[in-house]
Length: 400
Image (cartoon, rainbow, N blue to C red; front, side, top):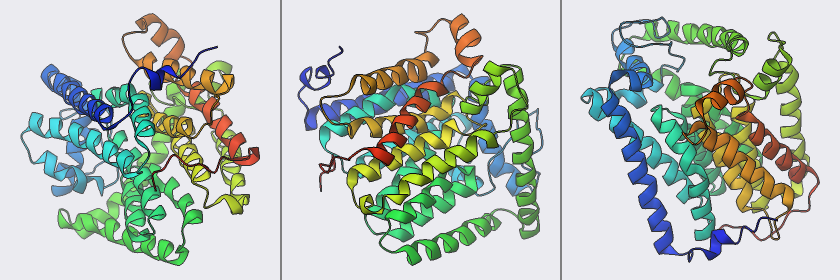
Protein backbone atom coordinates (compact mmCIF):
# COMPACT_ATOMS: atom_id res chain seq x y z
CA UNK A 1 0.00 0.00 0.00
CA UNK A 2 1.30 3.43 -0.94
CA UNK A 3 1.93 5.74 1.98
CA UNK A 4 1.13 9.38 1.20
CA UNK A 5 2.79 10.65 4.37
CA UNK A 6 5.84 11.41 2.23
CA UNK A 7 3.96 14.48 1.01
CA UNK A 8 4.19 15.88 4.50
CA UNK A 9 7.28 14.22 5.93
CA UNK A 10 9.64 14.97 3.07
CA UNK A 11 9.34 18.69 3.74
CA UNK A 12 8.29 20.79 6.65
CA UNK A 13 4.98 22.44 5.77
CA UNK A 14 5.16 26.12 6.47
CA UNK A 15 5.47 29.56 4.95
CA UNK A 16 8.90 28.76 3.55
CA UNK A 17 7.70 25.73 1.60
CA UNK A 18 4.62 27.44 0.24
CA UNK A 19 6.93 30.27 -0.84
CA UNK A 20 9.19 27.80 -2.63
CA UNK A 21 6.26 26.24 -4.47
CA UNK A 22 4.99 29.74 -5.29
CA UNK A 23 8.37 30.58 -6.77
CA UNK A 24 8.36 27.37 -8.81
CA UNK A 25 4.78 28.11 -9.94
CA UNK A 26 5.70 31.51 -11.37
CA UNK A 27 9.20 30.77 -12.64
CA UNK A 28 8.09 27.61 -14.41
CA UNK A 29 5.07 29.42 -15.85
CA UNK A 30 7.23 32.26 -17.13
CA UNK A 31 9.70 29.84 -18.71
CA UNK A 32 6.88 27.86 -20.31
CA UNK A 33 5.29 30.90 -21.94
CA UNK A 34 8.67 32.34 -22.90
CA UNK A 35 9.64 29.07 -24.60
CA UNK A 36 6.48 29.19 -26.71
CA UNK A 37 7.11 32.83 -27.63
CA UNK A 38 10.64 31.92 -28.75
CA UNK A 39 9.29 29.22 -31.03
CA UNK A 40 7.48 31.83 -33.07
CA UNK A 41 4.02 32.48 -34.42
CA UNK A 42 2.98 28.86 -35.02
CA UNK A 43 3.40 28.01 -31.33
CA UNK A 44 1.13 30.82 -30.17
CA UNK A 45 -1.70 30.37 -32.65
CA UNK A 46 -4.28 30.51 -29.85
CA UNK A 47 -3.05 33.93 -28.87
CA UNK A 48 -3.61 35.15 -32.44
CA UNK A 49 -7.19 33.88 -32.15
CA UNK A 50 -7.65 35.80 -28.88
CA UNK A 51 -6.01 38.92 -30.26
CA UNK A 52 -8.27 38.70 -33.29
CA UNK A 53 -11.40 38.98 -31.13
CA UNK A 54 -10.36 42.48 -30.09
CA UNK A 55 -9.13 43.58 -33.51
CA UNK A 56 -12.17 42.26 -35.37
CA UNK A 57 -14.51 43.94 -32.91
CA UNK A 58 -12.78 47.26 -33.47
CA UNK A 59 -13.09 46.95 -37.27
CA UNK A 60 -16.59 45.41 -37.23
CA UNK A 61 -15.41 42.17 -38.81
CA UNK A 62 -17.27 38.91 -38.15
CA UNK A 63 -15.57 37.27 -35.17
CA UNK A 64 -16.46 33.73 -36.23
CA UNK A 65 -15.25 33.51 -39.81
CA UNK A 66 -11.98 31.88 -40.83
CA UNK A 67 -9.02 34.24 -41.17
CA UNK A 68 -6.29 31.96 -42.58
CA UNK A 69 -3.89 34.87 -43.04
CA UNK A 70 -4.08 35.61 -39.30
CA UNK A 71 -4.47 32.24 -37.57
CA UNK A 72 -5.45 28.60 -37.93
CA UNK A 73 -8.80 27.44 -36.47
CA UNK A 74 -11.88 29.51 -35.66
CA UNK A 75 -12.77 31.75 -32.76
CA UNK A 76 -15.55 30.59 -30.41
CA UNK A 77 -15.23 33.20 -27.65
CA UNK A 78 -17.88 35.79 -26.94
CA UNK A 79 -17.43 39.48 -27.83
CA UNK A 80 -16.93 40.35 -24.15
CA UNK A 81 -13.65 38.45 -24.35
CA UNK A 82 -12.39 41.25 -26.59
CA UNK A 83 -12.35 43.59 -23.58
CA UNK A 84 -10.24 41.18 -21.54
CA UNK A 85 -7.66 40.61 -24.24
CA UNK A 86 -7.56 44.29 -25.32
CA UNK A 87 -4.64 45.43 -23.08
CA UNK A 88 -2.51 42.51 -24.25
CA UNK A 89 -3.51 42.87 -27.92
CA UNK A 90 -2.32 46.49 -27.88
CA UNK A 91 1.14 45.46 -26.66
CA UNK A 92 3.88 44.29 -29.05
CA UNK A 93 2.93 40.75 -30.11
CA UNK A 94 5.36 38.65 -28.11
CA UNK A 95 5.26 40.93 -25.07
CA UNK A 96 1.47 40.74 -24.98
CA UNK A 97 1.52 36.96 -25.34
CA UNK A 98 4.06 36.59 -22.53
CA UNK A 99 2.07 38.71 -20.10
CA UNK A 100 -1.17 37.01 -21.12
CA UNK A 101 0.28 33.68 -19.98
CA UNK A 102 1.58 35.14 -16.73
CA UNK A 103 -1.75 36.78 -15.93
CA UNK A 104 -3.49 33.43 -16.39
CA UNK A 105 -1.07 31.70 -14.02
CA UNK A 106 -1.29 34.58 -11.53
CA UNK A 107 -5.07 34.74 -11.51
CA UNK A 108 -5.40 31.02 -10.79
CA UNK A 109 -2.80 31.29 -8.03
CA UNK A 110 -4.68 34.26 -6.54
CA UNK A 111 -7.95 32.30 -6.60
CA UNK A 112 -6.39 29.32 -4.82
CA UNK A 113 -4.79 31.55 -2.17
CA UNK A 114 -8.04 33.47 -1.77
CA UNK A 115 -9.72 30.28 -0.53
CA UNK A 116 -7.75 30.83 2.68
CA UNK A 117 -6.86 27.18 3.10
CA UNK A 118 -4.34 25.86 5.56
CA UNK A 119 -0.75 25.94 4.31
CA UNK A 120 -0.31 22.24 3.67
CA UNK A 121 -3.57 22.07 1.69
CA UNK A 122 -2.52 25.08 -0.37
CA UNK A 123 0.82 23.43 -1.06
CA UNK A 124 -0.81 20.18 -2.18
CA UNK A 125 -3.25 21.97 -4.48
CA UNK A 126 -0.48 23.95 -6.16
CA UNK A 127 1.60 20.82 -6.65
CA UNK A 128 -1.27 18.79 -8.11
CA UNK A 129 -2.16 21.61 -10.51
CA UNK A 130 1.39 22.51 -11.54
CA UNK A 131 1.90 20.12 -14.46
CA UNK A 132 -1.55 20.70 -15.92
CA UNK A 133 -1.02 24.45 -15.66
CA UNK A 134 2.07 24.15 -17.84
CA UNK A 135 0.12 22.14 -20.43
CA UNK A 136 -2.39 24.96 -20.66
CA UNK A 137 0.31 27.63 -20.79
CA UNK A 138 2.18 25.78 -23.55
CA UNK A 139 -0.96 26.42 -25.56
CA UNK A 140 -1.26 30.00 -24.19
CA UNK A 141 -4.81 29.05 -23.19
CA UNK A 142 -7.52 30.93 -21.30
CA UNK A 143 -8.44 27.94 -19.14
CA UNK A 144 -6.50 28.86 -15.96
CA UNK A 145 -8.45 32.12 -15.96
CA UNK A 146 -11.73 30.19 -16.32
CA UNK A 147 -10.85 27.97 -13.35
CA UNK A 148 -10.05 31.08 -11.30
CA UNK A 149 -13.38 32.73 -12.19
CA UNK A 150 -15.31 29.70 -10.91
CA UNK A 151 -13.25 29.46 -7.72
CA UNK A 152 -13.57 33.18 -7.00
CA UNK A 153 -17.33 33.07 -7.50
CA UNK A 154 -17.37 30.38 -4.81
CA UNK A 155 -15.07 32.40 -2.54
CA UNK A 156 -17.14 35.59 -2.71
CA UNK A 157 -20.41 33.76 -2.07
CA UNK A 158 -18.77 32.39 1.09
CA UNK A 159 -17.72 35.94 1.98
CA UNK A 160 -21.31 37.13 1.39
CA UNK A 161 -20.20 39.43 -1.41
CA UNK A 162 -22.69 38.19 -3.96
CA UNK A 163 -22.21 41.21 -6.19
CA UNK A 164 -18.60 40.18 -6.83
CA UNK A 165 -19.44 36.49 -7.23
CA UNK A 166 -22.12 37.35 -9.79
CA UNK A 167 -19.63 39.56 -11.65
CA UNK A 168 -17.22 36.65 -12.18
CA UNK A 169 -19.99 34.28 -13.26
CA UNK A 170 -21.56 36.71 -15.74
CA UNK A 171 -18.23 37.80 -17.21
CA UNK A 172 -17.00 34.23 -17.57
CA UNK A 173 -20.26 33.06 -19.14
CA UNK A 174 -20.11 35.79 -21.78
CA UNK A 175 -16.55 34.86 -22.70
CA UNK A 176 -16.48 31.03 -22.66
CA UNK A 177 -19.73 29.76 -21.11
CA UNK A 178 -18.04 27.40 -18.60
CA UNK A 179 -18.31 29.67 -15.51
CA UNK A 180 -22.11 29.46 -15.74
CA UNK A 181 -21.73 26.46 -13.38
CA UNK A 182 -21.20 29.11 -10.70
CA UNK A 183 -24.99 29.57 -10.54
CA UNK A 184 -25.03 26.45 -8.36
CA UNK A 185 -23.38 28.53 -5.62
CA UNK A 186 -26.79 30.18 -5.29
CA UNK A 187 -27.67 27.37 -2.86
CA UNK A 188 -24.80 28.37 -0.54
CA UNK A 189 -25.69 32.06 -0.58
CA UNK A 190 -27.20 33.86 2.41
CA UNK A 191 -28.49 36.57 0.07
CA UNK A 192 -30.20 34.70 -2.73
CA UNK A 193 -32.24 37.60 -4.07
CA UNK A 194 -29.12 39.76 -4.21
CA UNK A 195 -27.28 36.94 -6.01
CA UNK A 196 -29.95 36.76 -8.71
CA UNK A 197 -30.35 40.52 -9.14
CA UNK A 198 -26.62 41.16 -9.35
CA UNK A 199 -26.32 38.31 -11.83
CA UNK A 200 -28.87 39.97 -14.11
CA UNK A 201 -27.25 43.39 -13.69
CA UNK A 202 -23.77 42.15 -14.57
CA UNK A 203 -25.09 40.06 -17.44
CA UNK A 204 -26.65 43.15 -19.02
CA UNK A 205 -23.58 45.31 -18.35
CA UNK A 206 -21.12 42.84 -19.85
CA UNK A 207 -23.36 42.13 -22.82
CA UNK A 208 -23.42 45.79 -23.85
CA UNK A 209 -19.94 46.82 -22.64
CA UNK A 210 -18.18 45.85 -25.91
CA UNK A 211 -19.86 48.87 -27.55
CA UNK A 212 -16.89 50.74 -26.08
CA UNK A 213 -14.85 49.31 -28.94
CA UNK A 214 -17.46 48.41 -31.59
CA UNK A 215 -20.81 49.57 -32.94
CA UNK A 216 -24.14 48.63 -31.26
CA UNK A 217 -25.57 47.13 -34.45
CA UNK A 218 -22.49 45.00 -35.06
CA UNK A 219 -22.50 43.82 -31.43
CA UNK A 220 -26.14 42.81 -31.72
CA UNK A 221 -25.40 40.72 -34.82
CA UNK A 222 -22.29 39.26 -33.20
CA UNK A 223 -24.31 37.52 -30.47
CA UNK A 224 -26.34 35.71 -33.12
CA UNK A 225 -23.13 34.78 -34.93
CA UNK A 226 -21.66 33.49 -31.68
CA UNK A 227 -24.66 31.25 -31.04
CA UNK A 228 -24.44 29.73 -34.52
CA UNK A 229 -20.70 29.21 -34.17
CA UNK A 230 -21.23 27.28 -30.92
CA UNK A 231 -23.84 25.04 -32.55
CA UNK A 232 -21.48 24.35 -35.43
CA UNK A 233 -18.63 23.71 -33.01
CA UNK A 234 -20.68 21.07 -31.18
CA UNK A 235 -21.30 19.24 -34.45
CA UNK A 236 -17.65 19.53 -35.42
CA UNK A 237 -16.57 18.06 -32.09
CA UNK A 238 -18.59 14.90 -32.80
CA UNK A 239 -16.81 14.59 -36.14
CA UNK A 240 -13.52 15.20 -34.39
CA UNK A 241 -14.02 12.01 -32.39
CA UNK A 242 -14.46 10.10 -35.63
CA UNK A 243 -10.98 11.10 -36.70
CA UNK A 244 -9.35 10.78 -33.28
CA UNK A 245 -8.81 14.54 -33.05
CA UNK A 246 -7.81 16.71 -30.11
CA UNK A 247 -11.36 17.87 -29.31
CA UNK A 248 -14.08 15.97 -27.43
CA UNK A 249 -11.66 14.74 -24.75
CA UNK A 250 -14.65 14.01 -22.58
CA UNK A 251 -16.83 11.21 -21.26
CA UNK A 252 -18.86 11.40 -24.46
CA UNK A 253 -15.61 11.24 -26.42
CA UNK A 254 -14.63 8.03 -24.62
CA UNK A 255 -17.99 6.48 -25.48
CA UNK A 256 -17.90 7.62 -29.11
CA UNK A 257 -14.33 6.53 -29.73
CA UNK A 258 -14.56 3.19 -27.97
CA UNK A 259 -17.95 2.23 -29.39
CA UNK A 260 -17.31 3.73 -32.85
CA UNK A 261 -20.81 5.23 -32.63
CA UNK A 262 -19.87 8.78 -33.57
CA UNK A 263 -23.37 10.23 -33.78
CA UNK A 264 -23.93 9.37 -30.11
CA UNK A 265 -25.82 12.34 -28.63
CA UNK A 266 -24.17 14.13 -25.73
CA UNK A 267 -27.56 14.43 -24.04
CA UNK A 268 -27.44 10.73 -23.12
CA UNK A 269 -24.54 11.64 -20.83
CA UNK A 270 -25.12 15.30 -19.99
CA UNK A 271 -28.67 14.90 -18.69
CA UNK A 272 -27.85 12.04 -16.26
CA UNK A 273 -24.73 13.96 -15.20
CA UNK A 274 -26.85 17.05 -14.48
CA UNK A 275 -29.19 14.88 -12.40
CA UNK A 276 -26.32 13.46 -10.33
CA UNK A 277 -24.79 16.93 -9.89
CA UNK A 278 -28.14 18.31 -8.70
CA UNK A 279 -29.39 15.51 -6.46
CA UNK A 280 -26.82 16.07 -3.64
CA UNK A 281 -28.48 19.46 -3.13
CA UNK A 282 -31.26 17.65 -1.27
CA UNK A 283 -28.87 17.52 1.72
CA UNK A 284 -29.87 21.04 2.70
CA UNK A 285 -28.50 20.70 6.23
CA UNK A 286 -24.98 20.39 4.78
CA UNK A 287 -25.07 23.68 2.85
CA UNK A 288 -22.98 25.39 5.54
CA UNK A 289 -20.55 22.48 5.85
CA UNK A 290 -17.14 23.54 4.52
CA UNK A 291 -16.25 20.05 3.34
CA UNK A 292 -19.55 19.70 1.49
CA UNK A 293 -19.01 23.07 -0.18
CA UNK A 294 -15.46 22.25 -1.28
CA UNK A 295 -16.59 18.86 -2.60
CA UNK A 296 -19.32 20.58 -4.58
CA UNK A 297 -16.84 23.11 -5.95
CA UNK A 298 -14.56 20.28 -7.06
CA UNK A 299 -17.54 18.49 -8.62
CA UNK A 300 -18.44 21.56 -10.69
CA UNK A 301 -14.85 22.17 -11.82
CA UNK A 302 -14.51 18.60 -13.05
CA UNK A 303 -18.02 18.46 -14.57
CA UNK A 304 -17.35 21.60 -16.60
CA UNK A 305 -14.65 19.75 -18.52
CA UNK A 306 -15.50 16.06 -18.68
CA UNK A 307 -19.06 16.67 -19.89
CA UNK A 308 -18.07 19.19 -22.57
CA UNK A 309 -17.52 18.05 -26.16
CA UNK A 310 -15.28 21.11 -26.59
CA UNK A 311 -12.82 19.85 -23.97
CA UNK A 312 -9.25 19.35 -25.12
CA UNK A 313 -6.05 18.56 -23.28
CA UNK A 314 -5.25 22.15 -22.12
CA UNK A 315 -8.77 22.46 -20.69
CA UNK A 316 -7.92 19.97 -17.95
CA UNK A 317 -6.30 22.55 -15.70
CA UNK A 318 -9.91 23.27 -14.68
CA UNK A 319 -10.66 19.63 -13.92
CA UNK A 320 -7.36 18.93 -12.15
CA UNK A 321 -7.96 21.91 -9.88
CA UNK A 322 -11.19 20.16 -8.94
CA UNK A 323 -9.28 16.92 -8.30
CA UNK A 324 -6.92 18.83 -6.00
CA UNK A 325 -9.79 20.29 -3.97
CA UNK A 326 -11.35 16.85 -3.69
CA UNK A 327 -8.12 15.37 -2.36
CA UNK A 328 -7.55 17.90 0.43
CA UNK A 329 -10.90 17.15 2.06
CA UNK A 330 -10.29 13.40 2.21
CA UNK A 331 -9.77 12.12 5.75
CA UNK A 332 -6.93 9.97 6.98
CA UNK A 333 -6.26 7.14 6.71
CA UNK A 334 -6.71 7.55 2.97
CA UNK A 335 -8.59 4.69 1.37
CA UNK A 336 -6.85 2.60 -1.27
CA UNK A 337 -9.49 3.66 -3.80
CA UNK A 338 -8.88 7.36 -3.14
CA UNK A 339 -5.12 6.91 -3.41
CA UNK A 340 -5.54 5.07 -6.67
CA UNK A 341 -7.87 7.75 -8.06
CA UNK A 342 -5.40 10.54 -7.28
CA UNK A 343 -2.42 8.69 -8.77
CA UNK A 344 -4.52 7.69 -11.78
CA UNK A 345 -5.43 11.36 -12.37
CA UNK A 346 -1.87 12.64 -11.95
CA UNK A 347 -0.42 10.01 -14.29
CA UNK A 348 -3.04 9.61 -17.01
CA UNK A 349 -4.57 13.09 -17.00
CA UNK A 350 -1.59 15.35 -16.23
CA UNK A 351 1.58 13.46 -17.07
CA UNK A 352 0.20 11.89 -20.26
CA UNK A 353 0.51 15.28 -21.97
CA UNK A 354 4.23 15.48 -21.18
CA UNK A 355 7.29 13.93 -22.82
CA UNK A 356 7.23 11.21 -20.16
CA UNK A 357 4.73 9.40 -22.37
CA UNK A 358 5.93 8.16 -25.79
CA UNK A 359 4.27 9.87 -28.72
CA UNK A 360 2.91 6.59 -30.05
CA UNK A 361 1.01 5.90 -26.82
CA UNK A 362 -0.34 9.45 -26.73
CA UNK A 363 -1.64 9.37 -30.29
CA UNK A 364 -2.88 5.78 -30.58
CA UNK A 365 -4.30 5.29 -27.12
CA UNK A 366 -4.68 8.38 -24.92
CA UNK A 367 -5.92 10.77 -27.61
CA UNK A 368 -7.50 8.09 -29.79
CA UNK A 369 -9.82 7.02 -26.97
CA UNK A 370 -10.08 10.33 -25.03
CA UNK A 371 -8.51 8.56 -22.04
CA UNK A 372 -7.39 11.81 -20.41
CA UNK A 373 -11.01 12.22 -19.26
CA UNK A 374 -11.22 8.80 -17.59
CA UNK A 375 -9.40 9.48 -14.27
CA UNK A 376 -11.34 12.70 -13.74
CA UNK A 377 -14.57 10.80 -14.31
CA UNK A 378 -13.48 8.29 -11.65
CA UNK A 379 -12.85 11.15 -9.18
CA UNK A 380 -16.14 12.78 -10.17
CA UNK A 381 -17.97 9.53 -9.40
CA UNK A 382 -16.32 9.34 -5.98
CA UNK A 383 -17.31 12.95 -5.28
CA UNK A 384 -20.95 12.27 -6.19
CA UNK A 385 -20.94 9.24 -3.88
CA UNK A 386 -19.48 11.31 -1.03
CA UNK A 387 -21.89 14.19 -1.58
CA UNK A 388 -24.87 11.83 -1.65
CA UNK A 389 -24.15 9.16 0.91
CA UNK A 390 -21.09 9.84 3.02
CA UNK A 391 -21.15 11.34 6.49
CA UNK A 392 -18.90 14.31 5.90
CA UNK A 393 -16.15 15.40 8.23
CA UNK A 394 -16.93 18.69 9.94
CA UNK A 395 -13.28 19.58 10.36
CA UNK A 396 -12.56 21.87 7.43
CA UNK A 397 -9.19 22.57 5.83
CA UNK A 398 -10.03 26.27 5.84
CA UNK A 399 -8.24 28.63 8.20
CA UNK A 400 -11.21 30.63 9.47
